[in-house]
Length: 172
Image 1 (tube, rainbow, N blue to C red):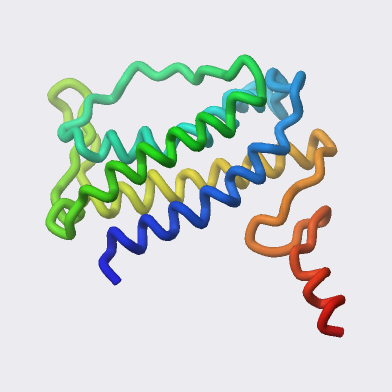
Image 2 (cartoon, rainbow, N blue to C red):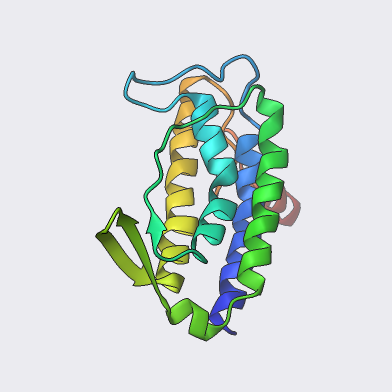
């Protein structure tokens, strides 16, 4: 299976899991943060919702200038899943047009004339679009736990949800 097809399949699979986590963000708690240095719940949710599409689009711009970065927050929790859907659609659109040659091209992050780092586009997509996304989704699951919101199953049972329980009950 070509690399791009693998990335697209993983993106689709993980989008469904991410959607379940974002759907748990409670309305009225978007300003909550576990520590003054941490992102708020809303900021983290928005970052997770928009990350795949942003990174996919960014992968086609090299050199990419480090932007002035402020972490916005949504107005409501209800905005997050539609933003995720739009982000996944953008990532799908960008990735669908890539070839193995494109994935091997060097992508550069720069600040002015200074190169911060350079990596193959495929590595950028794997590390920043996907792994970085999972990292923040894990943070969000901890935020939910701290807010006493039931944490959905991500890669297996959580303390609140066991996707295997009904299958095990039916089989045993």
